[in-house]
Image 1 (cartoon, rainbow, N blue to C red):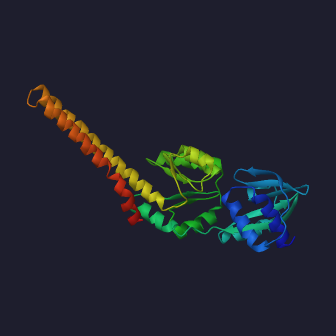
Image 2: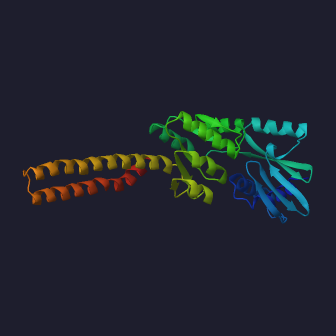
Image 3: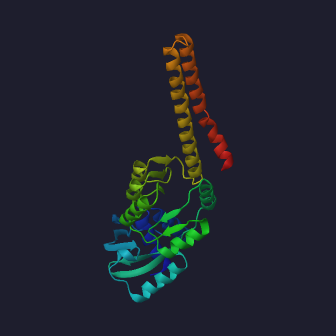
Length: 291
């Protein structure tokens, strides 16, 4: 099969999926095939962690990683291994029982990924771990480019959950950032789940504790910094309010302070608490400048 024929089949199937890799295939393929007609695909079904299947012109089409197929010819397997050595994510395309092509994608980190991870490191985050279904070689290639400390590749969704459970046993707290259906189970096991709002699936958004309302990674250090400052201010306000009560009650009981001044002092402490909390409104501007 020629390239155009292969890519039209891939587009027909993958354009009905919201997986990031599927969208990458569609966008890249359409640049190559131009105005070539796209066949109709029916019975499109996602196979979690493996790929997708569909029916085109009475033939069963399957597109996915090696785990999707029971038997792969040695020559084809070697081609896939060679592509993966160079950091490609590879997917095989099968029509009925015949393999008709390989789709290879290169993960290119976002421009903001490395600066974001650096900012997280400056905030005191010790380990940056990547859980991905891509093979380990691809994971390590991406990790070197952006500063990931622990790349974990070749993980199925259930294996991501096990990895998260293990991290929970070894670390005091684990935050997980995700945007897909495959991330949701592991995100539910994390101490804090963070969903990428604009790019996130509905399941990921429902599971997460925090949703970044935009597809910008640089919002992550800001969210962490803001939450830490909010925690500090809450503690300060508790000390101010409880401290004032602890002072005023004995003074009032002992007759040292009359009721009127005590009430005024209490209300004054309430205003101090409010103004102290309002400092969080300024943090957005400060955080924007830092990022």
